[in-house]
Amino acid sequence: MTRLSTDGLVTTETLTTVTERGVSVVVRRIETPRGERLELDVEGDEATSRLDAIALECLTWQKEEAFLATVREGNGSVPSDGRAVKRDLEASSRSELTRITNEFSRVDVSRVIAGEREFLEVRAPKLGRAIALNAGALRSVGRLDQRAFTELLAEHLNG
Image 1 (spheres, rainbow, N blue to C red):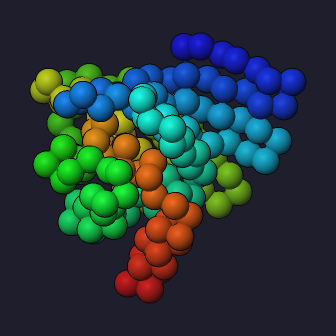
Image 2: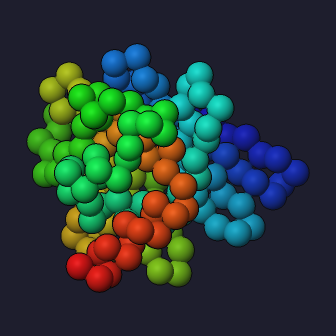
């Protein structure tokens, strides 16, 4: 793990890199005066996404079909055959990476190996829900804007 600090205000910790089918996503924990975030940085792509605990918890509510419908291929995401979203994953290896919290939510983030596939698992212990995303799915999540997360949250609260 690498630690970097900028002017003492922002701390960045590289947690892992999730790779599959030529897509690599560097996962970092970011701490700023405004809170904690999980950063998804797709290698070779200019887009970087920082997700707070609520956005991450929102992912744990999603079913594969809903997730794939939310993440459109036209936004530069990976085609659906390259995205994997799993629940109740039988892991051969699990490494706890970090916890992201705020006043509303808490999520635990782990790197999971299942067979020969690698996933980032986001678990919301308070809700008893978890979702595991491969590199393609992480890349797609990184392409979502705040409006998409608001829609996912509204669907859950209204549904």
